[in-house]
Amino acid sequence: MLYNLAIVIYDLLVHLAAPFSRKPRKMMKGHWVVYELLRQQVEKGEQYIWFHAASLGEFEQGRPLIEMIREKYPNYKILLTFFSPSGYEVRKHYRGADIVCYLPFDKPRNVKKFLDIANPCMAFFIKYEFWKNYLDELHKRRIPVYSVSSIFRRDQIFFKWYGGTYRNVLKDFDHLFVQNEASKRYLSKIGISRVTVVGDTRFDRVLQIREEAKDLPLVKMFKGDNAFTFVAGSSWGPDEDLFLEYFNSHPEMKLIIAPHVIDENHLVEIISKLKRPYVRYTRADEKNVLKVDCLIIDCFGLLSSIYHYGTVSYVGGGFGVGIHNVLEAAVWDIPVVFGPNNKHFQEAQGLMLVQGGFEIKDYQSFRDLMMRFETDASFLQNAGENAGAFVKSRAGATAK
Image (cartoon, rainbow, N blue to C red; front, side, top):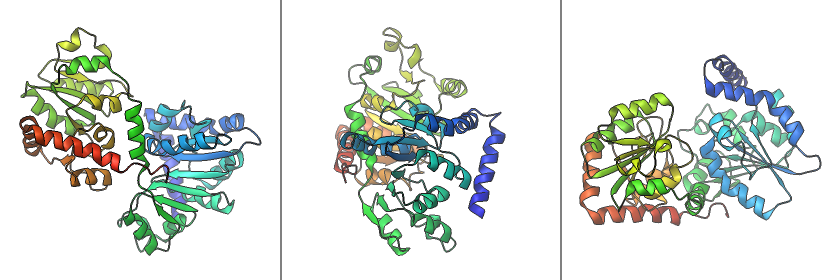
């Protein structure tokens, strides 16, 4: 079968890449120990609810639900699995789960072994997780399985004439909790009716993050007395080319950059494009932070709190594979700017609709938008209020 062949080939490619690349190497190490880890940590006689997230973004989406279940049903244990090292490595010590590990590749033998040891009483797959062999086996074992915060579009394989195998995978779910009415309509057309529209749990998560935000005295000192501060989060090279050119020629503006990749090569690349004084966050102190115009965040875990200090935010990825989390910025009542690859991100589409989010296509459109933010105080204020109101109005998916 083509699906199983594709999984075998993917597994082989990860093995081949492991000696040369850190990410596949970490993944392979995690896979080697997963069954032993489960045997050691799964407690006999306990009931485990299994949550699976591809990576960090999906985990954040599922996190409010994990924590609400934990609070309301403390007699259940939580098993959390990740597919990607970028999720597992950051959240392997997450205290909201009893066991955190990688999910072995979706090969029939792995699936049976994993489920024999973990023996979950129910499973939640977050957003785009549709592993055929896992879902088939869960269905066969009559273990209830749910899709959470999933979203469906007309161009997905489930709705193509050749997508029969994948349509059958969706029938394994006991229920799908989807983000919007369009998803429900598409599923209805292929005979999937166990569907409820609840919205996106990420809105609940970003409101929770806002409540738990860190106070960052150095960032506060850097911003000073209400200076126009531009916060660029999860930025890539093409994003940086735009806002750095603008920043270099606008001395009235301060800049905080939290790049998506913080390895030394990328940091050196950013620094080479700067024509104004900067300091890295890990080397900042109470004296030098007052003498610079640009603060480079060269560590993880601060971005969602840093948006709080912004006048305008920029979320990267829109000139590449797709934008990152715009809601983390919008929740702070500030306008959100992003690149053109945002069509499949309904939260970005929603922000644009209410005029709290703004798409830019090139330097000219970016410059025009920034000039307006800097010169039109009511436009700036309204855009920020629209962004914040958009997030608050869509809370509540977790409870539903």
